Image 1 (cartoon, rainbow, N blue to C red):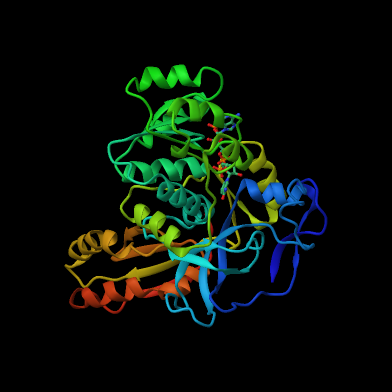
Image 2 (image 1 turned 90 degrees about the vertical axis):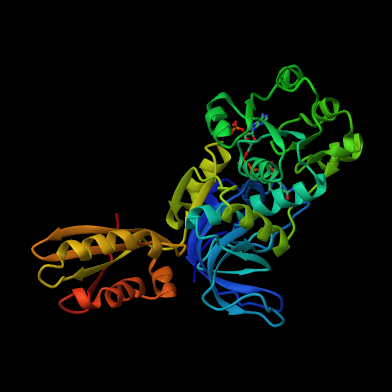
Length: 395
Ligand SMILES: NC(=O)c1ccc[n+]([C@@H]2O[C@H](COP(=O)([O-])OP(=O)(O)OC[C@H]3O[C@@H](n4cnc5c(N)ncnc54)[C@H](OP(=O)(O)O)[C@@H]3O)[C@@H](O)[C@H]2O)c1
């Protein structure tokens, strides 16, 4: 299989794309045909060698902690998974940026997430769900998030809002519109945080989450006044010293289910800033480290279209056109279907195009199934069954 790998620790240029052996599902895991992965801070920390003493890798190593893909092998003892299911989830410390990856925690992808959003939800979603579990009931309470604009911060803010919390979140000035759209009251990080937060919430802060690479954990403890309600996902030493709590992601499907459930209810949209192909893995790591936001790497080649031609019987043209337009929202439900639209209406024929994120997703959901169903529902008004033309045109 094709995979990104690094044979030595170092800068992003140690990353190469090369052939390597496929992994296989073992007991308690599933193997996915990977559609996309995200780049998390731990990926560039591992690749650089900065954390080799605590998290040593056996080299050459494949970067990547999370992935979205289609299950193609189910390990022994796994009951909640089926071949062909589209899931997002967590692999080992480093092994997902490849055509196939083994996941030990996973959840079905909500139909209102794109593949890229699902890729970005693995580690961030699991971390956030564990943070929220550690904080307990947040209904009507005020939560401060340091680093709310990041991938983890977005997930924590979204799950906290879903739990009924008021959220104040830090981010650079350019991130404030993004935070406001999340329903978060934005403020900047850095010196004077306690004063800015006190001006926004004079009644005080119930709990705080530290999800930014900053040295602000002591400030958060001071602002909250009770260290047990301050959670960091970064600073283990500071947490031990200040009696705050260190929380990590865990390979636990229940955490991913919670993130996905908030997604399904429209309460959590994973942050995605840049999408790059596997061949740009070096650039993906550079961008992620530079603070350019959340980076997703796609393993699939390009979107594919299914084009179908409907020929209405004489006098039925406008009826067929209207029926097709009415049906569009109903058939465009499967994750992976980017667009479903009428692309031409002329000379007595109506052309419909479905665009899928990848050929694998198209096969998974059945080539042209929606078109065939539409053809059957319109059979009395068509000169014949719709003719399907598959093309690989990419946008
Ligand atoms: N323990 C775990 O299991 C676990 C799991 C996942 C992540 N993490 C850690 O959690 C952190 C966040 O991860 P992520 O994926 O959300 O990263 P990210 O998307 O890069 O987000 C980083 C966040 O930190 C903010 N930030 C950057 N510099 C800052 C500074 N000097 N002071 C305060 N805030 C600053 C950013 O704000 P702007 O972009 O608005 O400037 C952004 O909100 C990383 O350190 C990561 O290693 C831990």
